[in-house]
Image 1 (cartoon, rainbow, N blue to C red):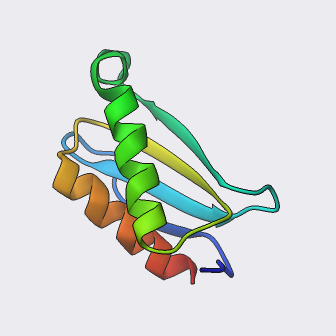
Image 2 (image 1 turned 180 degrees about the vertical axis):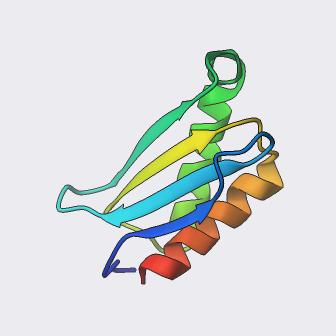
Length: 89
């Protein structure tokens, strides 16, 4: 899937995640994850993997994904990534 613009979904509020998806000239999916350090230390690897898997399931190939997590559940993360991708197409 080719992205035409930048798409964003979610909010930077507690219990949510703000996801921004943008086209990239570099091959592959680059993920930049930020948020509360306590959450990232414990769940950072799992969140990155969930974002990458969701992006790949939606046919994304070359993109920059920026995510600011504030304790979102897995189902919320997947929904925000999907919505951001759809807004960027």
